[in-house]
Length: 423
Image (cartoon, rainbow, N blue to C red; front, side, top):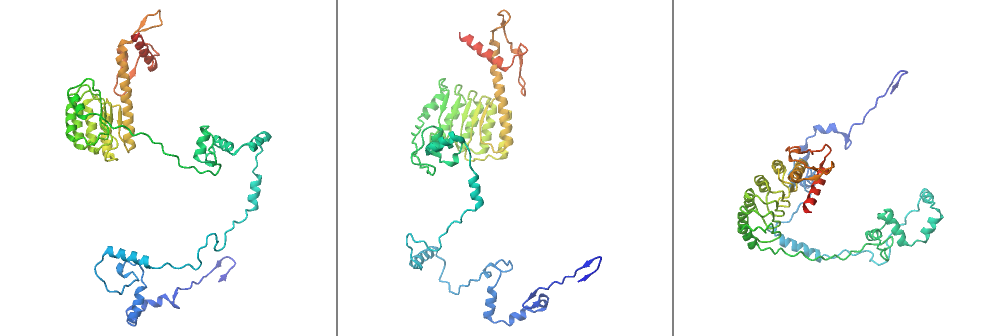
């Protein structure tokens, strides 16, 4: 090390790495083959066992130190091997304990918790709330159940169990014997009567649909098991000519793709069906798309439900196809399908809301020609004409004869008109 007045120069010497007292550079010229030739067979076996198990240059069977010197006894018999292992485990005696177990005897050193620090004691002593003599006297005389009720009212639900909390909120009185350390016991399960089976006669229903019975407006075949495909074919064939059926529910009846395609053909020809429910069946996503597509031709179905099928996830392609078909349908108001992607959900929800608004305006439009209400000028009738309502596929606008008429005012007039007609 040399020092000057202006700069300081430091020189540090590093010690070279050594192996068995020699530098590593001296082993570069060692002949490994010559060293191996000088070893005995026993020394070579010992050296072969000292291998790296993660060395990729060696096959897996040479990376294991275990060597079985026994001769093979035959092919592997797994059943006999397991029986031998179990027999050997049962016959092997347990290792005896040096000290037998004695109930109540503590072995070794018993753990004693350390005393709390003085800072913690001072902090606990400082936590004191002065609530006044009146409140302190009331709390000192309160029972444990009353304290629990007070804690529940203040929202300290973590200080009590579930039964105590709900008993306090419902003012049922605290359960006896629980206290602060009470354990919630399992309550007896409430037994509810099973729902009665669906006793709808399938043959009679098909006959009434074929005969176009005007009294048959709703047909519910939910949860009827083992309906043959021939019955579905007859029902869907008769549905094409029916003019009175408005609700058809086929939940959990075992509909397959074959019968669902027949239903799609029947929907295209039917003009009166308003609600269709085919939930909890075995319909695949492509067939669901065909069912939604068939709703475009009928233009009568307002509610369609087809969730909980064999395939729980429809996929992005199927959901986008359903979204495009729904956006072309101006009569559909409700759709029961589980959609995974937000884009499809938001687009369908927005379009269905537009359909609902359009349906409401059309119903309102049908009542407008019959409005004849008493006006404010000498009792003269004030009639709203149909020309005051403008329809636009994207934006429905209502314009009344008066300047400040809005939707609420028109609804009131509709209701008043209905009351006048009833009188």
